[in-house]
Length: 447
Image (cartoon, rainbow, N blue to C red):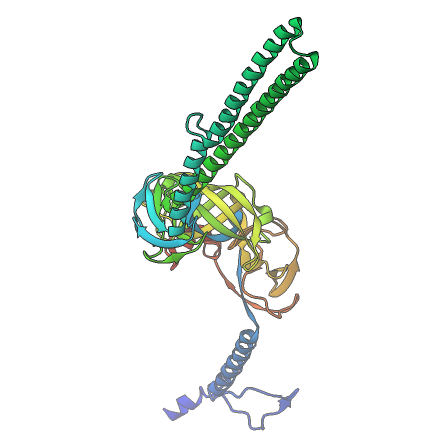
């Protein structure tokens, strides 16, 4: 039995293993097969090579890349704003005094001409009474029946008329007596001179009376103006509503001493149709703002509700402390329960496209756009169209298959080897929904 078995055993080499080119020949077992230790050694070498390759690959900087997508893009600039009435009416004190009565409170609706508050100033009451007394005096001085001034002139004219009548009769008597030489011609001439002198005095008195009458009329007009002015100041003690509206703030407390032009309260028409969104636009954006421009808005009080409007007015004067300009945006439609004081965000649309080739705005970094080709970064210069907060339009220069870098490049340079992580275009430039923490901004982020 043993002899038969030995007939199948291959002879083992009697000589030691020789080195060929520094590599030992694989040893074989007694059946002629390569030893298992060799396989283990080969596996270890392959594993080491793979580990080295993996380590080197992991040491490469990683970048996120995506491909061109398709979607809407809107180029706009942004601002915050507050819902305010088209115009507010400050109710200010026209006179100084004590706020004697406050007839309304914050939130009260008022009608035009309705008394709101009353100010008490005793000096105005005295001035009005004094002006009324002065006016009555001037009226009496001008009254033809009761005026002592005119009565004095009338008395002088009556006396002068009597003297003129006596002089006239004397002249007529001398004229009759001169025919009989009872009087001299000199006496007659003297009588005639006295009559002419009385006529001149009467004419002078008439002119003086007319002048005095004009003076009295002027004094009456002045007294009437003084009385009207005093009455106006007296009436200004009662503050009245200039329009139908609502009291916006808490009025000044009753009993407060106020000066001229001190604010007492504010009134405005706050019906939704008379409200605007008053935005604070940065000075670098205001040059792109013009009346009639489309504006998309979102209010914190109405999350998820898109609101549109158009620029109503751009104010010329800037707020120097904030370096912003006020812009009024009129709502395209009124919204129930909208109230003054609500805040929100605005997107002033400059241009928009419903469908375009787009990339995330992070693809444009400091004027650079990079793609990864053959594992290396390559700077390219595509033609960029519209730009929004989260996306840019690519007009040309990028192929649909290009892997465009969308993660921060930092100090990476063109030609540097990188490893990539692919982000699907739909995930890289998603259509925004209203699930953001800020519900008002959610409607604007897609722009």
